[in-house]
Image (cartoon, rainbow, N blue to C red; front, side, top):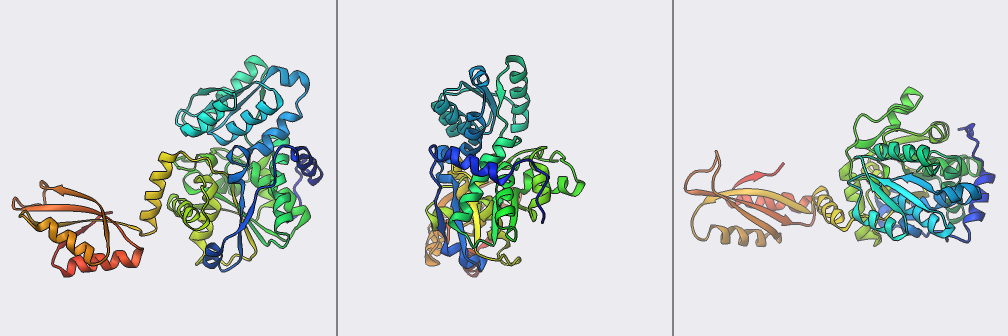
Length: 409
């Protein structure tokens, strides 16, 4: 592919890297054996989840805000964010002595809200999505003269995020494929600009949550289109409309934009916890989720770098996602059996589950229902298993014992 007409240049990305050199340190790049075996090529993880404030966002926020004039800094800044950009702007404001106001969706993760407050920002929670919060941020900027720090659609933001691309080349100079989570496109655009000029033959893949994917339809139409639906746990990439700055870069420089399912992100998050010992939020796990979902059907040339864009996750959401990921990975099994409502029936089921080495997590008795006779009880079970093959073995064993098995959807 040929370079885009974007005004962001590698020279400007290098200038941003110099600016950031006293603010942040390069994040680690870790080889992951388990993912490499799944993909069939060497895979490295670019750990932006270990960045200051927990994501790559400080790169663009500090670059943008440090270049404001003294008069602009005095007026303060305003931003809209689901969480990571909010923390990046608030941290940059703290370091630069700039007052920060952030509009966040009402359902923004509480740890992201609290962390943003801890950096000294004022927060107003309004709207259900980033796009709705952005409307209020723009209105405040127009009303007060505060400078809007857009989460992705600005020259300096893209230049700052592009410094991650420079680090990728320094840490993995022979990289052949780079996979990056995609929301508004600031990180992907910045990385793409750096890589296309410095290593033009590298394959660049953007990954969106399939339930919040505005880019595929926009690329097909040739211009930004709003997403038809926005329903994903990956709040960090839940952006309804590509930006005017980022869209042409993604269109011209990125080889393909793919999507990943909610289950794929859950499995990736669980995989990264278990196999890489890394805490990553759903948006940050999107690149790994796509690799795991496509390892059997698409040949990806290595070395591969998957960018883990952020690690700011609500512990309560983490618990739910771990359970969701365990179900998606076949590590939990849910089913019910219908048995006579007599003493000893439950004890027999528990013993039979133990006989196939399945650990029981939850048990529920159901005595009324259209298919349950008056002398019967339905016992719903949630089991911990070792994977899909073990699940099948448990169900086969239950049927062999004569139980009527009702599998959960």
